[in-house]
Amino acid sequence: MTAENTPPLAPLAVITLAAGKGTRMKSDLHKVLHPIAGRPMIEHLMASAAELSPARQVVIVGHGREQLEDALSARATIVVQAPQLGTGHAVLQAEGELADFAGDVLILYGDVPFVRPETMRAMIERLHGDDAPAVVVLGFEPADALQYGRVIAQDGRIAKMVEHKDASAEERAGRLCNSGLMAVRASELFALLARVGNDNASGEYYLTDIVNIANGDGRICAVVITDDPDEVAGINSRAELAEAEARWQQRRRRRAMDEGASLIAPETVWFSWDTVVGRDVLIEQNVVMAPGVTIADNVTIHAFCHLEGATLASGVAIGPYARLRPGARLEEKTKIGNFVEVKNAVMGKGAKANHLSYIGDAEVGAGANIGAGTITCNYDGYFKHKTVIGERAFIGSNSALIAPVRIGADAIVAAGSAVSRDVSDGELRMVRAEQLVKPGWADRFHDAMKKKKAERQVP
Ligand code: UD1
Ligand code: MG
Image 1 (cartoon, helix red, strand yellow):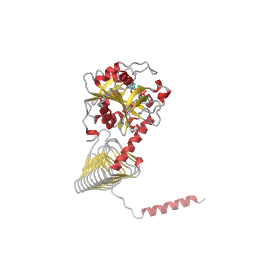
Image 2: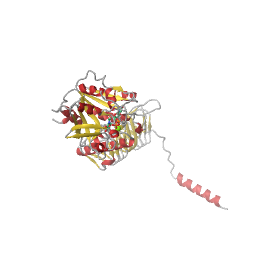
Image 3: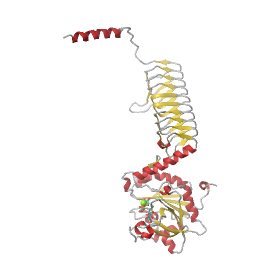
Image 4: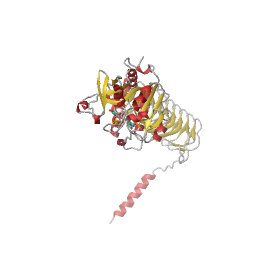
């Protein structure tokens, strides 16, 4: 069995800390709601935690409670910590919520969103080790230990946890750092927290002190060390947000290639958290996938395309410079060319819109050809209306299809037509002024004008 589908050892509650002020983001949006790959960072974390099937999810918030309630209340209980007196005090706020809970508690940070489910599981498994540790801490060894709290440990057993501010020079020299994440049994967690004081350099209630207290009781506390310091990287600023995005994208590009997509310049292709990409897909340079994109096998995405909420069936080709907006559904072998925007529209099998078009709120039948510059005029300033184009219909260039309107199967709309009434199957519709034909008129005009100009130039 893989780590992901091993059953959990005991019921699990996850407490996610998110009450910090996040001042360095300089944002009105709560820090943990800032998106990475188009998804709020805390939701990445909750999705990973969900792989362990927690019975409870509690999120501790300070300011911005409403924002988090709007985003998460369906999946987690939001508990307010006010004032914020430290990480230990933050976890203690979940006590009432978990009063009836018997099981394991995993403590996560909302701004450390990319902890892998395997790592979480390893912490919980360690908690159930034969030596029955009271607390399991997730440690890491960064290249630069900076201001992180230090874990003084030997052979995986912790002797002491010390915050950087409180540490001696010798303790600071240690490279093993505290990620902040912990696993503790609910039956022990709150009793330990009740004994934590704030007599330290910051005057805060440190969560890390539960380790020192348990040690004092003669209990064992263990450290699990991640081999990937990136997974415990916290996000405190816009620059760190961008770095986390870059790391996420790099992994996702790699996965797309491993799964059979060709990316000519991977570093210029941007995925969303939910992008689905098939095999034998070619993605050229500078392509952005916003959320909601599904790409089947054998699809070609030429350079400079932007896709969002779009479904591309097998054999589709788009771009360069195509824009697919939410509700774009391209059936097999459709072609969407340069400077074509498709929104809330189905392009039937083999339909083409190769140049400079807007196709919105439309149904385009299989095999239809949408000429250059065709616009579906879907909006009258108040309401949106639908355009339905039949199979194999041919829409001449620079036509305006004024919705609501239907164009029948096999119909032809002549170039430059503004069509506001339905067109029947097999009909030719031409909506433009009769042509005026005057043979030789231009020649006579030029002759007359040249003569006039020559006369005026005579002194
Ligand atoms: C904490 C750890 C430190 C560790 C570091 C890893 C403690 C005492 N220190 O330090 O050992 O190396 O994280 O990044 O635990 N939070 C609240 N309420 C509070 C205070 C914090 O919810 O009252 C939340 C924050 O939103 C954040 C997390 O707890 O998600 C950590 O807070 P932060 O202030 O960054 O802790 P550090 O001092 O960095
Ligand atoms: Mg911090």
